[in-house]
Image (cartoon, rainbow, N blue to C red; front, side, top):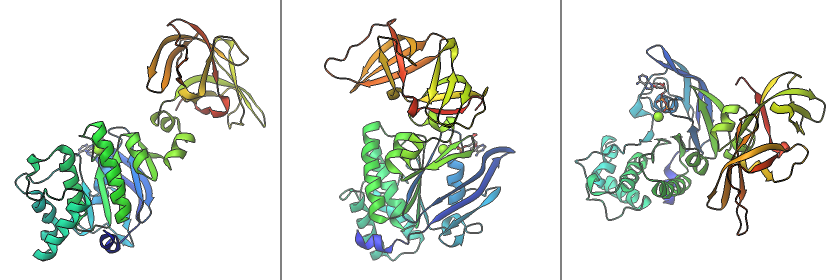
Length: 366
Ligand SMILES: Nc1ncnc2c1ncn2[C@@H]1O[C@H](COP(=O)(O)OP(=O)(O)O)[C@@H](O)[C@H]1O
Ligand SMILES: [Mg+2]
């Protein structure tokens, strides 16, 4: 294993101003991000936002309309896909069905004209790395989905690429298996120190694998940050609502001074946020907060919003309440459940206290 780690050339990937369109329709606009040598970064966003297009451009499978892609010190503009030194894994395994596991892994090595004995040793090393020793002579159809995907990973890294690209690699697998493979991939990536870009629409997958996330929406990048920063300090309403759950109430800025901002809400209620916001009085804003930042009480209190319980559902360690405010806005609250936690009946009158310090405010038209 160490031997492999030493022979991988860690390279930094830099993507700048990447744009692409299909038949005149913009798919990706001015995408820019870097991956440090040895880092694992996730491109995350809803289906259709342009993730695979970015990946294909990096791989050299499409020629982008504009932008530069630099791997290490090499500009890839005129480097063919097969000369880029990139390993790829796709969602649908894409193993050769008539070749054995060993032959599948050896295939790119044979293309590189690696001598037979060295190839054999490399295949064995790869099989051990993905914990499939003993499976060398099986055909893909004799393997489970998870095993097939491990072969696909082994094949992608067998040629010691300096960049590994994965496009929704575990999308076809069930949840528990996906988690096992994510843990394995992370271990492998750390062992090899290979610069890695993974595309996924699954925020949990992105958070558990990547040191930084590139959040995409409608063809552009919304935010690049660590998983925690993206969750805790979202730069846009889209990021806030895409990562985890967020409640939204719309309001109007009444006044803002050096220390706090008063937001007027429907039904003569209001919320004072203990931070200064860059909004003028009269601006329409969307106030967001996580379900865990709402506390319910049976008694009114200053600043608490009157609501009714629609339904309360125990979810593992939590109790999740769906509520409606008097103006019809839906809210979700969640609390940690204990043995004596009271479960209110639907229709119960409650008062929702929102942790104003944890609220975010965005322009309402976003
Ligand atoms: N080969 C193609 N021809 C035409 N349109 C495409 C093609 N591939 C992708 N698109 C369009 O480009 C946009 C981005 O697609 P894609 O990069 O596959 O997104 P993602 O991987 O995030 O789901 C989508 O609107 C999609 O329909
Ligand atoms: Mg895709």
